Image (cartoon, rainbow, N blue to C red):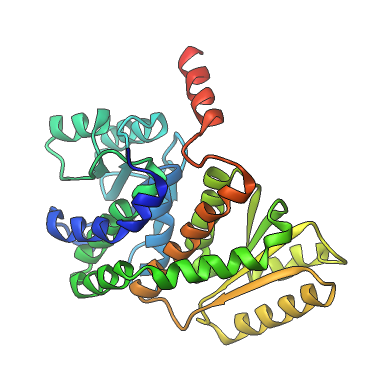
Amino acid sequence: MITHESSLESFHEQIQYVLNNYKPHGLSASQFSNVFIGGLGGSGIGGKIVKGIFSSRFPLPVEVVSDYTLPFFVNEKSLVILSSYSGNTEETLSLFEQAKSRNATILAVTAGGKLMELAVENNLVYNIIETGFQPRMALGYSLGFLIKIFAELIGENTDSELHTVVESLKDNGKHKKIAENMQKKFKQTLRNKYVIISDAAFEGVAIRFQQQINENSKMEAFVNVLPEANHNVIESYYGLLPANFIFLNSNSNDRVAARFDFVIALLERENNKVMSLETEGLDLQTLFDLIHALDWFTIDITKPLGVDPMQIENIISLKDYLASV
């Protein structure tokens, strides 16, 4: 059985698999008016992250849809990329039918199921993910394929960067060390809720981290993004709060970096638990290194919390309920 620990130990192999197995789509961004990425949970988060990666150079509007319904303006000039690990996510299958009815171009990333069947039936380009993982632990596949898809749309080749990512992830001692330091920082407050404060560049990474805390560690977690959170959420930061604060700062904007400094000082003045993770920019290695370290933290704290990250009883119960109504 593939455990979360074993999938993290071999995470670099997912990126290598993408490099070895990517199926080109032969499309160009100039053929479209907009791009939509459809997916939910562990399959959908790659869309939010890849949107951030390419935001400064991608020439088209990009929207991530984590719902049953595509926006009204999706049409024959739209590219719809659907990601579902199982291939049976009902929301994503609903998006497929809508995209098809509106003559949009569809690409798929999946490990099988109904989505793969539909891709084959409709002669679509699709990229296949290896099976055996829980979807949230297969991010290397889904995000890796999305990076390749987006790069091809604008005529870029990201292979060299992705090879660097593979080599960096092979040596996961540094990632485990960051996770260990985080666990030490919050040792006495592990059962507090987690508030993740990021800049716009790291919003997708922050949401991924929140989802991993929710699903792996069974704890509440929330994301706030600067500078927007300085115009509202900051007014709730008075006194000692029942939260662990984790800051993700790419240092992409000097004014936002100054806001990080202010909020950190504000919280620390009241003895709140704060940890800041900073990078210099947002290259692919930096992004994957941060995701990997944060993933390790969400697994490491399951032991002192006494929870099993492999068990997702509430999610399974919901799916059973929806199947009956």
